[in-house]
Length: 528
Image (cartoon, rainbow, N blue to C red; front, side, top):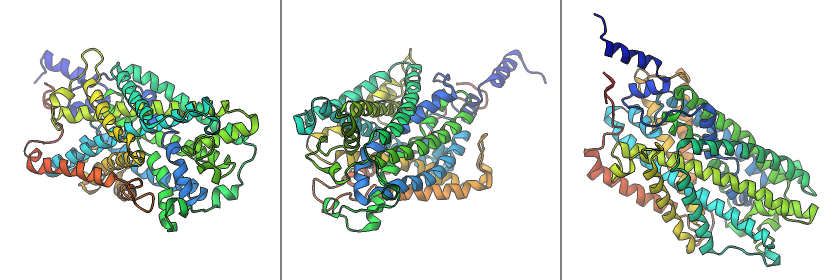
C-alpha cells in the first residue's frame, strides 16, 4: 500500500532530521529548544563549567596544609585516573539519551518502569541541589579572589590595604549571582559566545600562569619537595592521623574534577548530540586533567616560604594562599604587586565564566524537572522565554536559592566548606544513579548510541560507582579538629534535612503521581 502525501512528507522530514533530534523524538520528546550549538560551543560550556582555576584555587591552601605538597600533587593524578571511569560511563549513556534532562532522564529509562520514577526523582533532586550549590561555590570563590585583588590594589595587609568585611563580601557574592542570572536571560547564542571567550581565556591564561609564575619567582622549590615531601600541620588542623590527612588533601582534586556533564544538559540544543555530547564530556576531562596538574605544579614549585603562606599578618592576611604565592613571586622580583593583581584577575575571570556556565546548566535541570511536574509550581518554572527560547524563570529561581545559601556568610566562618560539600555530594551523587542503573540493567534493554562500550560497560560502571560513593563519603567528614561551631562541617545536617524532606514528600505524596520524564510527543505518529 502506498503512502499518502502527508505521510510521505512526514517521513522525508524525519529522515532529514538532525540525528540528536531524531533520537529525542524516538524517546517521546518534541524539539522545543533551539538546536544550533556546535561541538566547539558545547565543549566551551562544558569546559567552562569544570574550569581550570575555580576548583583548584579556593581549596589549594587547605589541601596543601593537611599533608604537604606530595599528597596534593599525586592526589590530582589518582583522582584524574578514576574520573575517567566516571566520564566514560556517562559518555556511553549520553550517546544513547541526548536529552536536556540528562542524568534525570537517564536514570528513569535505565532503571525500568518499576524503579524508574524513584530513580529519576532521586537523581533530579541530587543534581538540582548540586548545581544550585555549585553557583554558590563560584560566587563565593569569585568574591574571595576579588577581595584579595582589592586588598593588593589598595596596599597590602601590612600597608593598610582594604580587606572587604563580611557584609561587602556578601554583596559581591549576590552581585555575581544576579549578573549570571541576567546574562542567562538572553538568547543562548549570547551565553555560547561568552563561553567561547571563556575557553580561550582559560587556555591562554592558564598557559601564561603555568609558564610565567615559576620563571618570575626568585627561587623555586626542589623536585623532591614538590613530589615527595610530606608534612602535617597538626597544631593548625588538629589532625594527627596520616591517612586521614591524605584523604583530606585529595579533596581539592575531587572537588575540581567534575562538571563535565554540562555537555549533556545542552544536548537538545546541540547538533549531532548523540556523537558530540560524549566527545565534549571526554575532551573536557582530558584538558582539565592535564592543565589542572600543570597549574598545581606551577603554584607548588613557586612557593617561597611554606609557613609564611598561612601567617595572618602576611600581605594577603593569610586568607588566600594562591594570592600570597603570586604576590611573593612578583613582589620578590619586581618589588610590585601589579603582576600578581593581573594574574588574580585572570583567575577571577575563570570564576566568572564558571559561574555563568553552571547557572546555565542548573536552569536546564530545573526546567527539565518542571517540564515533568517534579517541582512545586512547575507551570511557572517550565516556561520558556517566547523570544529567546531559554528557561528564564528557572534561571531566576536558581539565583534566588543561591542567594539564600550565601546569607550565613554574615555569621558563619565555614560557609564555603559546607557549600562545597553540598555541591560535590549533590552533583557527583547525581552521577551515581544512572551509572548504577546502567550497570544492573539487562543488556538487551539498552539501546546504544554511536559511543558504545559493549562488554566493558559493567566493569567500568562498577569502578565509577564505587569511586562516586567514596567521594561523597569523604565530603561529609570534619575538616578541622576539635569540632566546634566555627569548625563544624554542617553539610551532613543540611543535606540530611533537605534530602529527608524530599524523601518524605516522595513517600507520602509524590510517588502517587510522579512518573518521571513525561512524553510530550506521540512516538508512534510524531504528533504533539
